[in-house]
Length: 126
Image 1: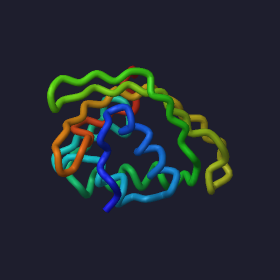
Image 2: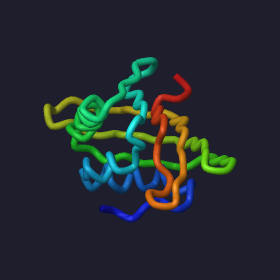
Image 3: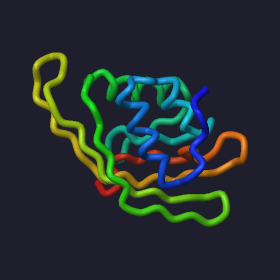
Image 4: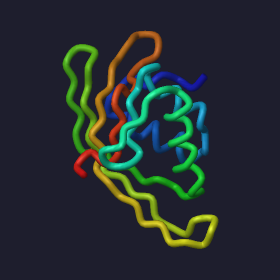
């Protein structure tokens, strides 16, 4: 298992690293068991199979994600992470992809597993 994320400002960067390595299990390890993932604005999914499937769709674009952390705030074991991201390029089917957003993520911290997503909302401002 990958190392836990010990600093909240590294959570979105760890997501990007694992995304770019096409490490689906590593991405899933960044989530709490009851994570809510919002792969499209206003369309949350929950449960391991649904979250894994949604992440697989993004990985299926076979394009890198660029992530810039804007703000992180935490109180005790609860955190809010805001980051800007882009996925640009040509998808395997030849279509041009230009995705971007500002993620608004809620995270929780525990000693054993570090910072993990409770709510991963990549289109947080939409």
